[in-house]
Amino acid sequence: GIQVEQSPPDLILQEGANSTLRCNFSDSVNNLQWFHQNPWGQLINLFYIPSGTKQNGRLSATTVATERYSLLYISSSQTTDSGVYFCAVDGGATNKLIFGTGTLLAVQP
Amino acid sequence: DGGITQSPKYLFRKEGQNVTLSCEQNLNHDAMYWYRQDPGQGLRLIYYSQIVNDFQKGDIAEGYSVSREKKESFPLTVTSAQKNPTAFYLCASSTGRQPQHFGDGTRLSIL
Image 1: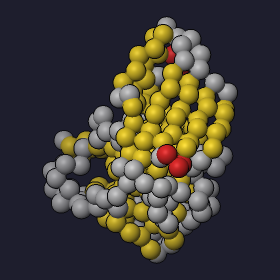
Image 2: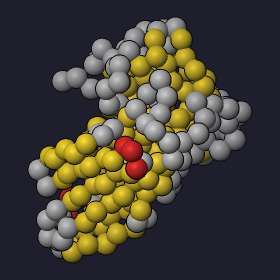
Image 3: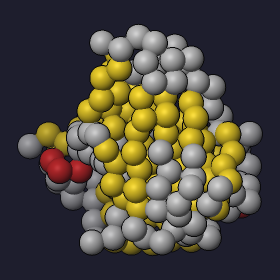
Image 4: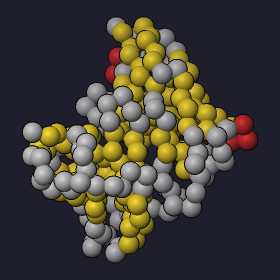
C-alpha cells in the first residue's frame, strides 16, 4: 500500500515565526488532506489538495502530484496553532485515507 | 448544524466485555469510516461503509464489528476479542470524492 512520511516529526517555534511541514507519499493519489489535531483530540480539516496550491488565511498548501509530495506553510504562527498536523492520502477508488505519523508543533509565546 | 456526533466522549470497558461506540451524521453522506488512534501515532482504518447495509474491513478490523442499517448511523462494537482496545476512536464521513469530515472522538480505556 501507499506509504506516507511526514517531516519534521517535531517542531518548536516562537510566536510569529513561519514554518513548512512536508508530506511525502509513495504512489499516485486521488485525495490528499491536511488536518490539524488540537490538544483535545479534535481533527480539523485544513485543506483538501490532491494537486495545486490553496490558501486559507495564514495557512497555505501545495501538492506536487508528479513528484509525490505536499507542503503545508504556516505563517506568523500563533500559540493556537499548536498541536499535531497530519497528512492523509487515498490512492484507490474508495476514499480510504492513509495517515502519516504527524508533525507535533509547539508554538511558544 | 450539520455534523458528526460521537458518543460517549469517554468509555471504560471491563475485561471480557463488549462495548459499542456511537457515530451519527446528519450531512447526508454516503460513506462512513472508523479509525483508531494510539498515542503518538496517526490514524488507522478499522472499518468503512460506502452504502447502507454494506461495509468492508480496513487495516485493523480484528476484534471489531460494525453495522450500517441506516445512512445516518455507523456504530462500532469493540469485542472482547480485541486484546488491546485502549485507544482514541474517530468516526468520519464523506460523499463522492469529497474530503472526509471527522467527529470529536471517543476515548476508550480498560478498567
